[in-house]
Amino acid sequence: MNAIDRLPEPTNLAGAQALIARVQAMLEAEGVAMRAPPPEPTTCCGRGCNGCVWEGWLAAVAYWRDEASLRLD
Image (tube, rainbow, N blue to C red):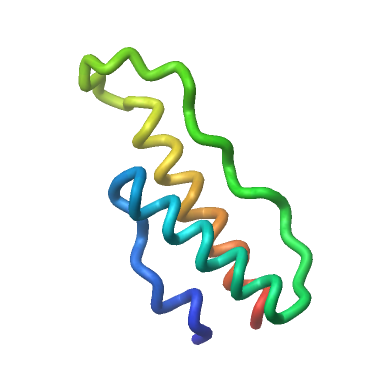
């Protein structure tokens, strides 16, 4: 288990942005190359749809975090 594993899954935009910044800093400090995090959605209609693009994006950020964790192991 490394430091990234202890970071919580993102549940909102601010949390995800903070997580991305922290993970990128950890990767840079270790000199580990990693693909860019998923881009923030631009197509949300704001109606609270089931399966909102933000839900998918948060899941993609969590997956990106897990991938970064594996690179630090």
